[in-house]
Length: 460
Image 1 (spheres, one colour):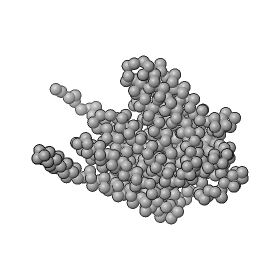
Image 2: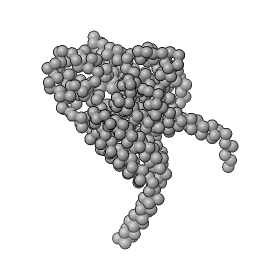
Image 3: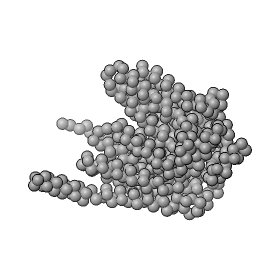
């Protein structure tokens, strides 16, 4: 008994020593948590000063996050690192639950209600007169965005909306479901990264305020896409690791199913299919399942007789906001007065194929480059779009994307129309706030690599 007591005392003293030694980490984590909790004071953007205060607080929270993760990598004790990692990840998402959701949530709920009433959300826009009786049953109908457009969401997402509507799910239920999916993403990311430093590297995603806000706060459904996307990638890795042919095919097929589910929820994982061909080799035939699943989930909505992609096609031609690249072209030699997207999406497809071809021998590294290329060339860049690339940024240690996830909070200044002569139009100073810091981070990364390349070779 005395020996047990002595061992416990030694263990406790060691723990106290670690807590004292790494006081900066704990201080930074407390700062991030407090600042994130403070967002609840500034989330009602119907008041004209709230968006500015929200963005200011979020930017400080992002700085605390960056510093905290930078300190976290120095924490030596594996058990303490695991407990700290998950405690902060879960607590941040709990703090996000009371936040006001984004306006897309009302659209999700409405389209689920439309389905359950026997109507097709791909055929009827919210403004359609045939849906007038439903409006009285939906108090938030006036808060639905883009009411002149029928649904632009893929069928897998629609099935989710319908299921949530049958459960009469409110905003909190949506947030909990999406936050749980996001925590599952964190678990998969730990498996993908592996090694002793997996918690320190995955924290760049798990503790990221933008990730937490987008899912547990604003209730965007992208976590439902990211989860099967990472699950499919893990299956493809397993397919290459096992030596038994039957197991290789089994993992490949399971991964193809997961990728198909991801595509049915949001189309972006479809851009990774060329890389997955390189990953699977002769087992790439299983990717036909990835294409079949979105088609199967379309059948309940009348496909192919009902052209469920028409609204999305019309919407992407006019939707334009916060793009990273095209505004440079348009402000110099190719004016785009009406902000029409021309053939930008076709350019993205061609660029993705070219980038994919550069990673025939390293498809896992290509994941970051393909999604990153799509985001850079996208004519629209909402903050939640960054959640598509941030798991890969954490996996590949791509710090410029992490920096962008912090500065991207300035996007929410669009809700303060006093700041703009033309609301929802990016001004040069706002682009500078969002894009200049990650560009500087990129230059520093390139400079660091250049300096490392000039160092003399190690000896011994």
